[in-house]
Length: 211
Image (cartoon, rainbow, N blue to C red; front, side):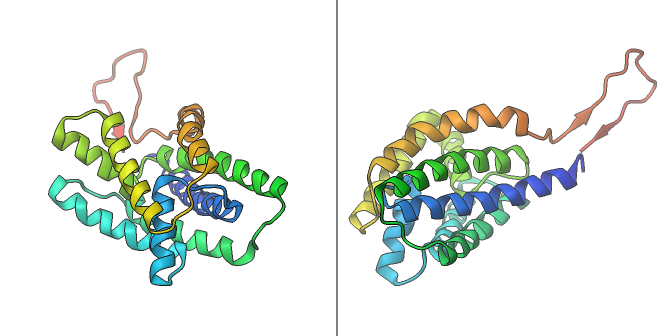
């Protein structure tokens, strides 16, 4: 496996930071990303933690991969389990924040950290997250654009989460507009190619390709 130690390290660091960033935004209380609005709303209704619902929803989404003929990678399963664990770990040591200035700091820090975490775990090239795989699977099966499918999914989960009591606010808008550009900026330098091909100046008799 090409650069496997780096890819695994980057994956685990990215997933850990993703969970931490989600907890920051939760404690800020100024609005969550669409899927997290759903997680929070469900958690409040069933009496579970947000992290537990992140894990539960992840595996429910993976069931939807079956008719879409999507195949999870190692990173997919790690994503489904670890993000929720780190959400709850961070929430257990981070108390509620009441001053508005600190809530804004937490929100901005959470969004920036989330963008970095997204680039890290996607750049590890070990499999998409459950929700990302759902989107790409629907795009392949329906032939619709990524923008349309993603919008429909996120609007749907946002509406359901809001009706269940999840927090929608300025943080929701900030996440919607900021995460894409942040991840887009950071993804190229953090992407580890899944395959390594060398092209010597003089073509050899036999080539090699390490995955």
